[in-house]
Image (tube, rainbow, N blue to C red):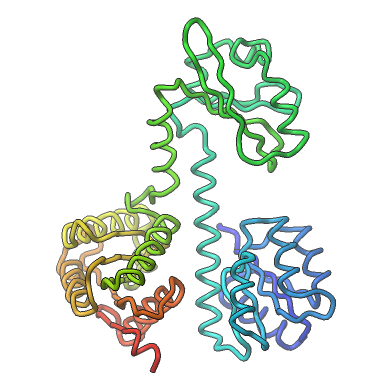
Length: 404
């Protein structure tokens, strides 16, 4: 059974701490409460949290300082700042220092829960990216891991084939000979990033990308023949930016692309629209037919969407059964028409085993005052409206709708 995501609730109001903790427990999260900054930091030292909900005004430390201390210890932990004294400067400072978002008290519980869900999903996506990027067996190039004493602890299949005697010879092997000083420097100074070192063996030149993996206390080496570098970089990039099930770009890469398109729309005044869609009652599919069938359904829906969108549109898996379509050079009428076309294509398609399936769509367009967060929130709100009004429908929200 998958472990519950843990959320740390930091607030000096005992009633609010209890209320938030109880609601989050009902929603399926594991919670821990702290009455002040010191308690929160101590809790984060003992265990890792997916998210910290931090009041800006705590009796001993500022919420921003508490967030910084928590993220210094656990960089992937997301944070949402809760405040009754928010200003634009506060919001800018909170996000610039690493907060996922901020919320002004008194807040709507639905809005808070939505932000919590998105923050936890972002943390999960970052973990998946790191897991894939650091999983040596997936890579075609040799990968070597050594403990602090210089003993080889792991060789991936490519390393075993190319250097069959490496495990036995360890630091005396020609590939590693002379690298001891680099290893010592990496470990002693806990350096992030990597050092690059070239070694020539029997006329072949190898490029060693050496890094210290602090979490597990080992040295990891990616070995590239120079001619292999470009291919390996492309493969690593693909693993880090693509959803492995559907082949669509993942949430992190989509957010990067969307940020660029928002800036382009602002600078040049070109239209841009965004669709967000969610498979209706998809949990029933997984519960009734199993996750293998559910995965096949996601792949089939992706195929249908690819067939019914333009080459210029950018498709992404946002998380779970939620997906995004970025439509450059398109206003809201075109976005609604595209979403309706997709909705009909999916609703009319016979899926193996499960029969029919429907999808709900939210659609919005870029407005001049938008930033990335406001655009994402509005399309999420439009999708929520579609699901609240019966599912299997398209709902649109313009920037004017949101303002009203």
